Figure 1 (cartoon, helix red, strand yellow):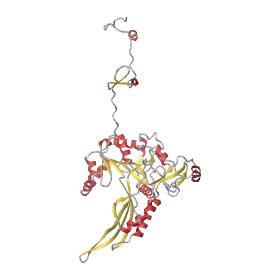
Figure 2 (cartoon, rainbow, N blue to C red):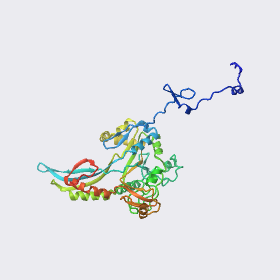
Figure 3 (cartoon, rainbow, N blue to C red):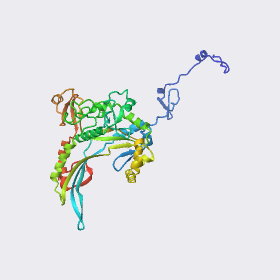
Figure 4 (spheres, helix red, strand yellow):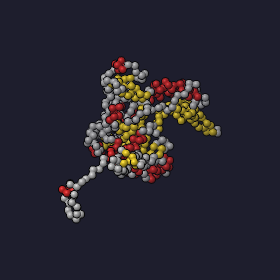
Length: 450
């Protein structure tokens, strides 16, 4: 028989070690038996209650789409938390832009008022839009090159002259070296950058492709390593004409989008904004414009009189800019185009607000996402250095899609080239020109021939 324990006496560890103990049942022993609608374990105890963790819900930032299809957000959380801003931009990248091809025919008419007064007016005979379809894929996030001309937190465009892009990631992790070597871009550099960007757009090149003779580090970098492998040698176009040959490997950016988002949120500038661009690439627009122009010109028989009949063909992208701005009355006021126009008319903007922006303003425009109309995708079953003929003989009959050889192996063309798209649409474009169609909604599929 065990001796009685006096509560006033001291108990040693040796006494406690000899006391009988009852082991607790394991958690797995609870899910065995149900008695009276209640789960119990072998010991007859009910299992302990555990609160289920709440479901994760991403933060839904407030935003609006302006009349010019420009997405603007003044959400205060996006201006305070770099992670929230980063996730918001990734979510916006999942929404592709809209790519349009516009065709218009006009003529001049002279209207007389009285005996000597007259005016010459431009009359639109037809105007229609075509809407090619973008490839359905996850777009890559790109960061501008260190030596490219871009807005990096000030009101003027700057250049990071410290490296050629993706070279010294550890030293630039916090951006200290880049801030010290960052300088204002010269007028000559800005003109060269504008010409290079216009050339890329006309030739259908993505931002990360280096042009022939371009300074290393001016082309953009792809942030994700998976995307860098996926988009290496994916650009549709003949190397050696307007691409550097051989095409250099895609490099990682010196600073990530998340780091740039932290920079924006940490800035105490009053009039600031973070702009995220959506770029469409993959077609030689210069070549396609000429083909559409010739087709419209050959099939348009003006039904109205007048002089100087003119055909116009242009390309435009909408829903292609996402802007994040502070949640204050001044930033919200400047986000409304008509309010800004009134301020300009009253000379308030040029005399007061614009000078203030030079000292207390800043803009970040260093990142975006790219969407392809046509691109090459690497075939995983190909062998590095293998030719297209060798691949076809080894694999057997393949699809009719064009193939090409790359240093990685063989790639297949995904999407339609501008020439294949035009062949499919040529009869429809000719018919629209003959009918003098007026439709600005955007046609995304060719209609019947008659």
